[in-house]
Amino acid sequence: MHRLVSVSRILGRVLWFVPLTLLIVANLAYLAYNAHHYDRIYRGLTVLGVDVGGLSPGDALTTLSDALGPQRLPDLAITSGTERTYLTMSAIGGRLDLTQAVAEAYAVGRSGTLLSDVPVRLRLLYQGYDLTPSWSLDRAATELALRPIVRSTSVPARRERLAVAGLSAAIEPASDGRELDLEVTVEAIERAVSSALGSSGWATEPRALQRLYGSRTGGDTLVMAPIAVELAHGSTALPSADLAAATETVTRLLGDPIELVWLPEGATTPRYWLIDRATLASWLAIRPGAGQAELQVGLDEDAVGAFIAGVGEEIDRPAIEGRWHYDVATATLTPLTTAQPGYQLDVPQATQLLVTAALTVERSVQLPVEATSPAVTQSELEAMLPLDLLGEGSTEFVGSTAERQANIVTSARAFEGLAVAAGETFSFLAVLGPVSRATGYADSWVILGNRTELGAGGGVCQTATTCFRAAFWAGLPIVERHPHAYRVSWYEPPIGLDASVFEPYVDLRFTNDYGAPLLVQAEVDTTTQTLTFRFYGRSDGRKVSATSPVTSNPQPEPEPVYENDESLGPGQQMLVERGREGLDVSIVRTIEWPNGERDEYLLDTRYAAWPTRYRIGPTAD
Image (cartoon, rainbow, N blue to C red):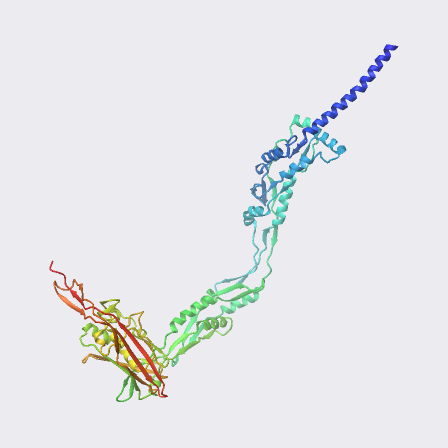
């Protein structure tokens, strides 16, 4: 009996000790498990099948980045009818938020409540939990990737259109269009990808069986067929346009040809320009109006203006100034050149008249042409007869070469009978025109810089000097005058009253301030070799006088200059020009007016010292 009691007591102690030992061992194991996972994700956690249990958050992020990179994400199969286009997730900016996924995985089993966390940790060990990360795409990248697809699958809507075929108008019907609904398409992509990735949840079978029969570890489930997404298109239509009025306008524009009419002054027969219907059709301009349903129909004003400008080239001409010879003995005028009016077409106004007329039944346009009268007419000069001699200038050209004399005659002829209107500023070069062999001028000696060389027009400055002297003694305001670089014998005496010209830089200009036209008479006497300019008009009583030239600052003549000339014989020498000393010359012109007032004009001239120049032939050797 005693032995049975002892066995029972021993057995009771054993039965009490085993559960206690097991409990202690379990607690120690739990504490060791928790200590091991203090900064690690609990076992049994996967992210899209990638096992991250037992890894620190940093290691888990590295593992997931390698396993779930963009290349691991499925492609998209964008379909539109029978057409299919494949896009990668990278192309549309799709990405998984792995950082957030690691944070969520680390939080599983760490709610902070022991009664809640222990079952979750045990279930993770037994069953496992797979977490699906959040997914997003870049809208801008998506739109850019879809743009080629949009261009190939979209059909623009077309409004009713006014078509002009030949010389008639017709209305082409409208058609609806089709364009991508980008917002709906993006939403469809988001839904399709989210559905393919699935949602987070507990595994349906124990982890042991998963390891035995295979699992989703390694992200292998992401290697799947492309995700099909159907493009979402919407129908588009444009508001109807009111084309009836536009069609009527086109019919009116092209109804009949338009004629342009101009009757020149003094003519009995008008001039016509006909614009046919085909030309009008080529000028048609059809543009959207203020509203979407409106059209503006008219003529292209640029095209019309270009045509009118061409008409203007046929009409426009400057007024032709008359020229007259005045006979002092009989006080009569003889026309040398008949004055003619000029014409100028107002191109902008004519363009508007044509554009307006095209929209009316009136198919004739009177061209707005302005007639311009000559600055001086014969009737004005005849009303002043007999004319007064206002000023006279004269120079001699004795000793000039035949070429120089010919140039003087040619240039003086350009001024014979010229009329200068009241208030007009006379330009010697403008009246003279181009000086060249082509205009009849011979080669003669001319001053070019600091040299005297052969050139077309030598002697023209004698004409300018003579004209200047007539203007000087007529008391006219001298606007521009340039003396010669050095003294020229033909212009002396008196010294200091010369003028040079050189096209197009050096001019002689003066203003007619007499209040009436001024008539220029240029006379060349080849017998006495004298050139004379006389200005005739109506005197206002002014009297002109001038002081004798006052010279100062003389400069001696430089040493002679000898220049080789291959055209001369050996040892032959030719005098080109004689040297002159340099001088400063001052002349004061005084004008006395009928009211007793006096005006003075100081004429200062600086002549440089100039060497005698010779041309010599080559030496004997």
